[in-house]
Image (cartoon, rainbow, N blue to C red; front, side):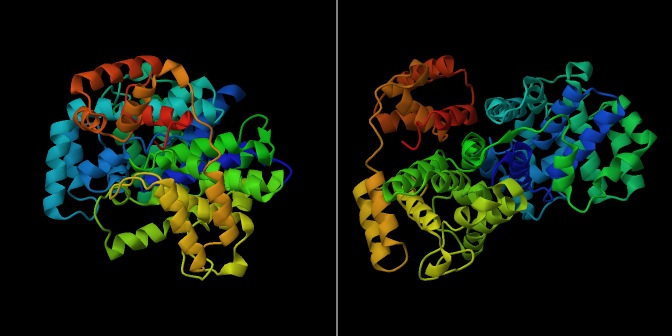
Length: 510
């Protein structure tokens, strides 16, 4: 592959956020096409259309920022996100009543969630949505988005009537790109759930409330023409073709920064997953170097390692954060995450070369792995290295049900897996050797002290000040002082924002 079109990589992230929000696969692609059609209809110039295009494609990029909290409060973060996107959350009491007819929660669970939402939404929504904004603002520039597109991403939960969050922006206080994004998303969701007449009636119902009434009027003048852009055999190809202006092209070996940003989105799916993808990538890359792998293959392995867990987005954070044993149904969901990794990567031409490696991280030489259950002759050298790196990294990171194992214990486990014929012996040896290559850190970003980094690592995983104090054997007041310094130095104000900062600067796992 000589070159890569960045939009195809961003499309893979859009598909991943579809999974995380319980939306129909390719919903984000459809929103992008509708938003682009609206931008053309109102006569925006090419740079402004490009802003709308990218904001709409990645409108849900911050969707995992509160995944753990939503799973804790509402049983299933994906089902809650699906309800929040599909229903009308402008009035908490109305939204809560609508929840009674949405999803398959048990009646007792549903009643508890409804009451919790009514009680917490007025004060809690702005705080919760600020996490979405902070993650979007942190990741947008890393994905190459212009500032105006990033601003639109921070407005995805606002409303035209000012009843949104986090800043209750109203009318023209919202960017035009943000207002177009709101309309495009609701147009796609209404179109998927209703016939065209009913869908248009739903958009008109939201005009002046959720949506800009002028944009709804423009849409309603010829809705068939706008919805017509979805009449495509291949939505991804249509999105790539519709990109305004000259496309951004990069070399395959330069896609790491995009893959790393995607990895952050998925690692936010669990409090104990933070930094896992980058950890695996570092181990796999160092192990590949030790084996003499050429630079091109190493670059592909590194990118695949960063993306190996994007399928986790399709599984509720209630599963990834659970401290106890998983039931049979949850294990089946876990086993499917590598399938979703494979499906997303194979859907995007600029990432298809990574699919076999990335989705094979739970395959085993004896055929006992998942999701394909392939055997030794079907696993490439890169896939074997990734599988060993994933096991070593996971063992040396804390999980909800156990503390982190010592590297020596992880090395012993890899040796046993190799002896049993499940993992490749040479790959395991290279990963164990690579685990000792990371140099000691002597200074930290933004002037953070070593103790502040210790606090940051625990805060990023959602621990309370009291629990952090207990872990570090200091007073709660001291923890509060450290957190105040951390927020001042990093500019982040939410758990998700702190977690992204820690992952960006290689401070996790700790």
